[in-house]
Image (cartoon, rainbow, N blue to C red; front, side, top):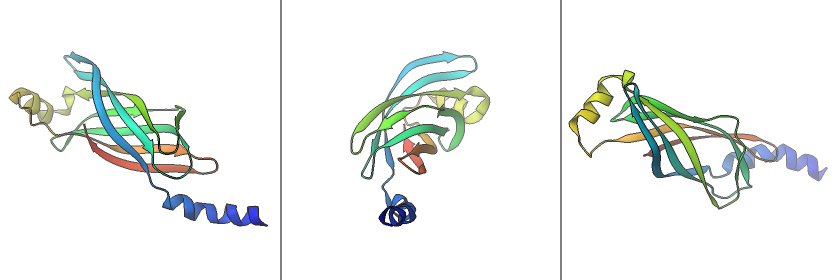
Length: 139
């Protein structure tokens, strides 16, 4: 009976768990081409509170000065997120010159005042339930 009660109340508790926090660390392996740029974004993921989780998917739209210019994703991975511990994750990303004026204007000005952001979703699973967390971070 106690096990049944725990299973019935688990979704309510899971919804109250804090999300996974995402912090940008650095870029690396940047490559430029006539089509755009590719790089690896190194981020720190922390499961703050709750039970440990496993990240399975992550996808993001890269925004430059408010305009979508590229993508970044991890698919079908099994990245362990222990409780209250940071894990460094390398995420491949691409920025396309086909995104248009936002990219050309931003890089053409030579300005250091570029607003590059990643907006997306993290898919993770716990012991019983799957979780989806949205994030929006400066890069």
